[in-house]
Image 1 (cartoon, rainbow, N blue to C red):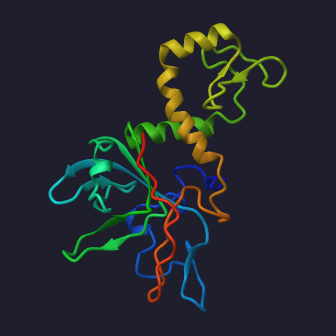
Image 2 (image 1 turned 60 degrees about the vertical axis):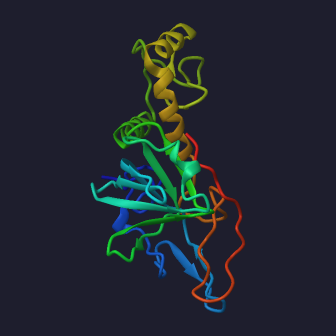
Length: 236
């Protein structure tokens, strides 16, 4: 079996579970590069934690409890300046949380999870991880497909035959009629998820030449903190 593309959500290096994430107190060779002169830690490649929200707590600060790709439940404690107030309106049980460049944190109470601070790159998707993964599989299985997704007619792309949906780039149609019919029968909702998958799949995750999303990297063990690039709002 050929190796998975690094942009496939089932790739465990690009999209690791909690205990495969780099820790926030050290350097992980797969994900980090450390400048020996300054101690500054930079990413070697891109990575992303995908998890499904299971429970929310709003005592003192927002705490999100989620389940990772391995079924491991863990806390995400929000230590932003507003204690997660702005983020809480986007978070619901069953939604998917996307944490770019997440690092594993050992909390004082002995639990292991994510400490989310200002400058983190976060996104909340209004559907389950299962829905996202099903769309991922459909996306990669669609490569080289030569049939209309509505009527099943076999045609060839690029010769005036099948044309891809302009938004998700996945679903194919042989005519405007089939496109309209499929849109009304459910592709309107599917398209949103497939568009997100296309966004993941179109990136080069193995080569770091700058942040995919504005992000603040943790400072070196001693010395001044790095400049805050941007505090990315959560969005759906």
